[in-house]
Amino acid sequence: MSNPLVSIRHLVKSYRRGNQSVPVLEDISLDIAEGEFLVLMGPSGSGKSTLLNLIAGIDTADSGSITIHDVDLSLLSDSALAAWRASHIGFVFQFYNLIPVLTAFENVELPLLLTSMSRHQRREHVETALAVVGLTDRMEHRPSELSGGQQQRVAIARAIVSDPSILVADEPTGDLDRVSAEEILNLLEQLNREFGKTIIMVTHDPRAAKRARRLLHLEKGVLVL
Image (cartoon, rainbow, N blue to C red; front, side, top):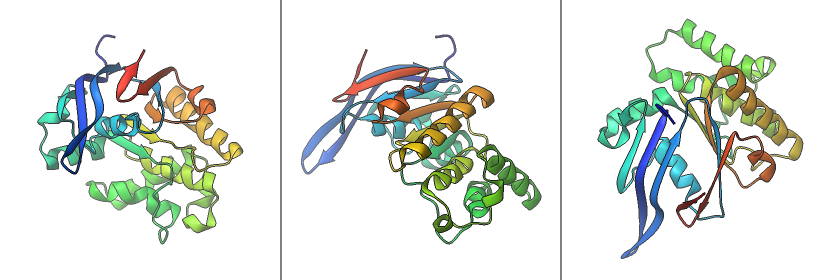
């Protein structure tokens, strides 16, 4: 793969449990091209979410490197990593992580409050993101007034509002019924196909995995090819 968007080399990660070191990822090397829709599967505890968090810059490895857009994440300070993450990563979680007292518009606007955008610019970006996910008519509704599928679409709008390089999705359909899950997967496919978004998704759902352009399996912290 020439000039991959994400280049991972000899990544190792473990966690402390009392006096013991528990290995989670062992010598992971992987390239991800720009515009890929990559799915990571594996049993619970295989290291899928840990790998996703490392790529997203919300966790740090014990050794090895992750380079994204020619930036080695291990060389960034905490503040520089936070700034990089805000500009380049969009997060989609299983349980939406919306703030209950805020409207859909206000939830989507949150990442933009840390930027230098004017209020008018923020409104334009939020309205565009909500239009992409088909929720223009729900922007003044709070999460409790939305279905699970609609809440996840708000979360996706929040993830794309700053036009990130990569969307990372951790079990995005895990809390949804089958119909809502299909709608979310269709939306992710659209973002990948029509908008060129690079998507890295963790899932246990074989139906969701079928949407991937590439599928990788993790077993006990090791990529199984």
